[in-house]
Amino acid sequence: MHQAKLENTYRTPLQRWVETLNVFDNDIEQLEKEDDTLFLIKQYARLQLSSTKQLRTDYKQHLKTKCPIDLLRNEIILSIMKKIQDDLSETLNPDLLPADANPIDFNEEVLGKATRGSITRLVDGTVLERTYNGKTYAVYYRNGHYEYNQQRFDSLTEVARDITGTLCSGPTFFSRKVKMYIL
Image (cartoon, rainbow, N blue to C red; front, side):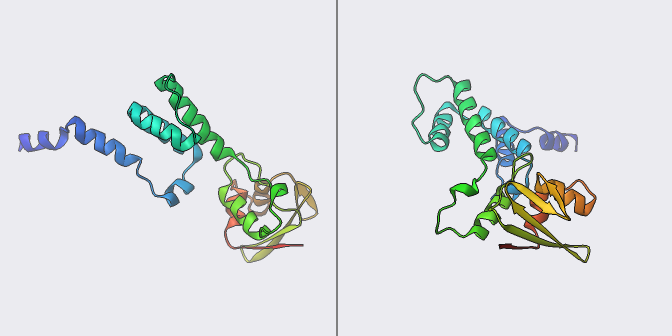
């Protein structure tokens, strides 16, 4: 009995390595829900556990260029991490919206990609309607500000917190059950 218990608790280095790698096997939906900080920590850990050959492959994949031969391991990791972090914080600019693009689709993408602390800029003239606790709220976006209840807000989160009275994310609150149109 005692030996069976020892066999279950003792794992070979290979078994521990496989368990560690399984932690990083996340589906896309889970990654999108996951806090960006935790995502960055997992990516950093994954890179630290990767071989130099794998790091060079990741470098090429993320930075779209061949990894310089003279870069040290830590420099490769830092370059990849900087690119991952820049990609996470990249905001979409409605001023660069192509003429044939649908502004509603653009706004939905902006709300879907919004991260904590990022500035959420929608297409000017956007109206968001959200029903919450049986009441419908309309928020108008123009000139870089959100207008709601005859007040001006700098962020969608400020509006969502004013409506709900809780500490909630504006992009999350307005990306669910929202009607969106352009004036």
